[in-house]
Figure 1 (tube, rainbow, N blue to C red):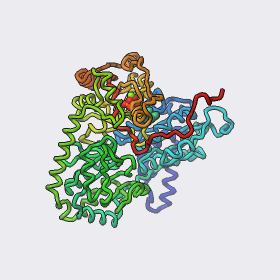
Figure 2 (figure 1 turned 30 degrees about the vertical axis):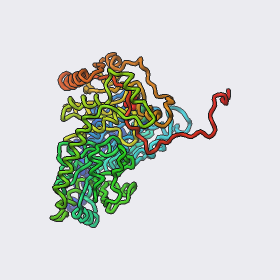
Figure 3 (figure 1 turned 60 degrees about the vertical axis):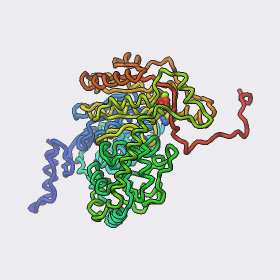
Length: 628
Ligand SMILES: Cc1ncc(C[n+]2csc(CCOP(=O)(O)OP(=O)(O)O)c2C)c(N)n1
Ligand SMILES: [Mg+2]
């Protein structure tokens, strides 16, 4: 009642005694509508917080329960917010990333102050480089005692400073809505995680506040001059190549990107780990650039006289030479489109930089292209696209084994030691034969997953979850759980190496509970931290330090002990059969299955040829010098 009265009072103030209504207010009670002025409402700070979440449609929270967040989690069921209580906050954060990346809807991470929040560090930075708009809620030790080192205190703002696009601490309980709303909007506008830090003694206060109006900033299609110049350059190009980045996925620009490519007759490469940034069944799709990417994409890129980098920050790792091919066309004109102007020209000199939304910019460019655009050398280019794609597909189909660098013999020894086991590539081909067309897949950091980057393509975006450029082991499993939460009717399959899976394995204790959706998880078993072992074979003379995993561990059995399905396979036939029946079990019987795939210990290309070098010995290290 009190709030209605307040609303009436405010309305009459705005209207004035007889004048026209200056602003309209939505009803104080009822659905919080975004974009409408609201009347103040008397409520608790936790009610205010939850109403603001509702207003932004945030329906999923991932974390582990703790007393400092309980005032709001208590309201989650009533609010229609599902709290996914995970086994580890690190996994909870990766789940939030998987959920939001595959749905385009914001989710939140929330946990106990101190140790709960410190566990979020890795996934928040991961989400940052995946450009995922997430809400990070960090309840904090109370103002009353902070600084006394009482209980669960840590510098929660400093800790995330470099991991979020925006962070703000609530300074007064009456500012709770203002701050939360701003944090959510920053995350959306910057497409990155943003943090609200809230001292726990600000809960359970009574405030009288209006819900926020909300600012939905319209994205732009770039500046007039820059789009005009870019369209001119593209119109005159003899061999235009497009590089689609995450921005194309995030802005939902598939259609515009296809139109632009078709108009220009330009082959389209996907940026590293963004295999779903262009439809895989399109004739101009070339596949991913970068580490273990598509040779066809690299060959086309090397021929470009104009590159349109659409929705990408051109991360330096993503365009490194691969397979010994220096494909980046240094003399080509470069047009870079990014929503974040700070990242334009950061890694490569650009001829035209356009700050804007990938889809809107693509539309602008299409409108401004000259009638001649794309005509020069079109038939030859299209023929070359066909030829290179076919050649790469055939090569990929024929590749069974990994190469040893000159002077090293690891792969040859690995094959001899386990002649009955599959190689990573044999396993990947078997997997690709049974993956459903519409499936969402996740990947992890590791050698087997990296080899796999060459294989999948997707007919639509938001289908490929790779860990991205923060490169955390332990992404594949939790991210696919998050993807399934957001896409319950789509088959999902996660992939991880046995070491990386071990980092996230505790989630098998959580994900078998009643309302958790079923997933299929493939674990590549080679009993080693393979990617690091590869570095050791190449630069450290097989001096294996910390690269061996426990052969006694049985992951499929562990899954079964947690009430899930678990199956261990060794041959191509077994793998195909087990994976297809696991996916069928996921979709028809609600079963979560872990497929443990025994592989030989072959190892593909190392991640960092660019950063590694042979050590030299100057002052030898000797155990006898160790002090007691
Ligand atoms: C959290 C984290 N710890 C360590 C690393 C370094 N690292 C990168 S790849 C890798 C090995 C992964 O081993 P595994 O998951 O078994 O996959 P494999 O390489 O054997 O296929 C390690 C330890 C990392 N990227 N992230
Ligand atoms: Mg391994």
